[in-house]
Length: 402
Picture 1 (cartoon, rainbow, N blue to C red):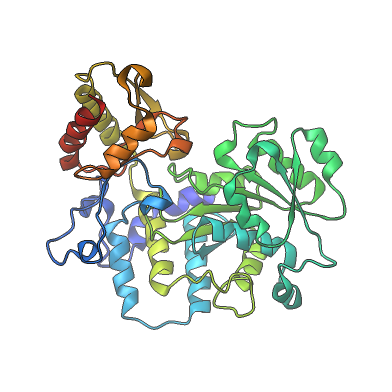
Picture 2: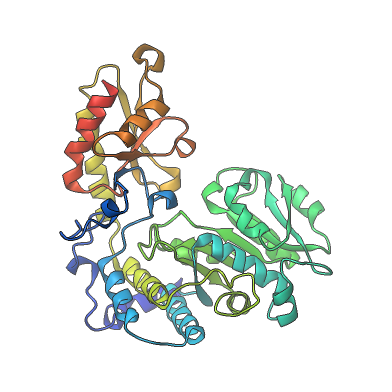
């Protein structure tokens, strides 16, 4: 952490010439209003929507920092060696964050797959070509039962078997000569009996590498180095959510030897599990700039703005009969303020699912938080909302919920 903090003092002078800082680009909101021109989505029969949910992958992630777009446009007109670009950008990102090494991936799931592959193969070219055939190799990954989720498929891609545990004693019993790695989901740190630091410590005690999924826990940006400081050997992050980099990008951070092994398992290397996880030169450079900006940006500006918007929406909803609201800090969005809306479905003759459908299919189309991420309640997130969309959102809520 000391290395990262001292580096940040000189960061302003390291930003490339011609690249604006966040306060120079109007980045305090969720994104700029698109310029007038061709209506591409309309041409192909699609209807854009107002995002009153969150930066979910299914909804396209966060809007990129304008400087990220500038960097990507710069890279578009240049030709570089992709192996060297991955190495150089990885070195720059690692120095920015204050960790041993970094690799840009094609999303957080890609980072999880590449991290798992790195642990299994090291830099052994024969083993790299064989994955997911693990014959004669370690093939078990320990995970808390409460941390199983749909995205652990990214770990299972490598052919490993997940071994579920619940207690420290379970971990001790589960470790054997076939144990390759330990896996932890930081979003679920408050679930299960083993918290993050203890889980990472168990890996260290037994000489087993540990990988943590931090895909949806940014900001704060300090978590990039924070998870490694806890003792995890590898940490996977999304690049297209809190970092506001390219939608299809991610980051794998951690031990230098494991990041090197992950790079060898990745595109553009042929005959590897990551060959199809290609990241363009534009995206690689865009992630680097997204990290630079995120480390200098005051996220308190966003939280203040989103809290204000939540209050405005709650005031508008107060006039709807039979409605009560509550401001919450969303677990899946790093504590961002969300507005949860309640009503008696029987009395109103309106289910939550039906309300969401009407909001989505109405004019304009409005997406609200997904059922599986909001405990079955109607929920509004403001991270992606623009100021001029609030009146429309409140009007549509009044039409549907009345």
